[in-house]
Amino acid sequence: MTSVSRAGHLAPFFKATCNVVSNGLKPVVASVPLPSDKVVVQALPKTSTVQTLHGALPIQNIKVKHGSRVPTQVRFAHSDIAYPDFSAYRRKETLDPKSKAEENVDGRQSFTYLIAGAGSVAGAYAAKSVVTHFVSSMAAAADVLALAKIEIKLNEIPEGKSVTFKWRGKPLFIRHRTANEISTEKSVAVDTLRDPQHDDQRVQNPKWLVVIGVCTHLGCVPVANAGDFGGYYCPCHGSHYDASGRIRKGPAPLNLEIPPHTFVDDGLLVVG
Image (cartoon, rainbow, N blue to C red; front, side, top):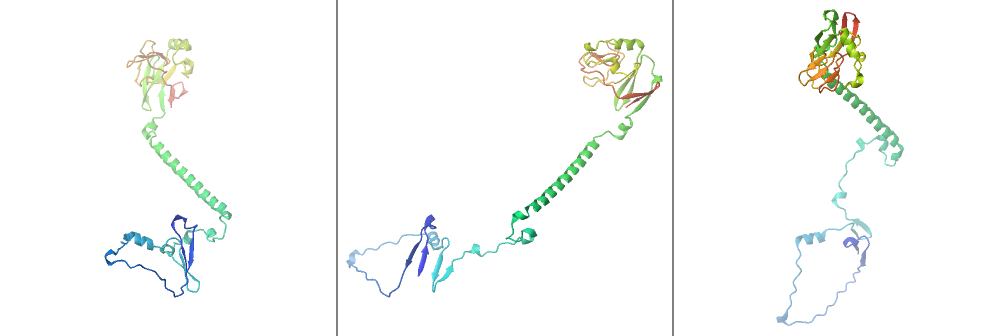
């Protein structure tokens, strides 16, 4: 009978083999009789049940040979459990284990890139639609858009007067300037202004000044034909504008805003 045993973590490197042949002889052991009053009883070592069971377990790949040289292998439970088959989920190109994966890797990568590109395009289009609907929801209402353009009859505004209209929810000042006001505003040195603008840059027709009546300081509504320069005056914080709507004194940093406007003829003004 031949047996192979391995011990410890050096089991892969050390093996002990012994051959035992039975010849029917019995060993002879010489013994010396002891006095009956001096019998020595040797206690057996104590071992726990866990140690006993652990020592009885087979370790690593144990092979037992017996009989007429027929090999017998000790098998464990994990080697008999059937593993799942995922062939139904695999591509036909990769079912054969002998085929090389590198041969069809380009095709698989192309399909992956195609799916990723199509998904990116669809995601971008969906994001664009969401942003468009969100921005459209913040647009002006229909009643506000209806007042996007207004027509003003200039013949109804006397010379030297300023009339206030409502345009897009804001006050609109239309001023019919006199010849004296026109000459005064044209003679102002531009380099002395806080927000330098010549009078010709602010009017299309010298007789008519069109500005939005909102103070550039904190959004108050100035008073027409008032102030130290005869133009507009904001009583809230003391900003003075001239007859060209330019800031001349006070905390306001900029001139009054000029809206887009056109003169259709001498008697009609379209703002917007």
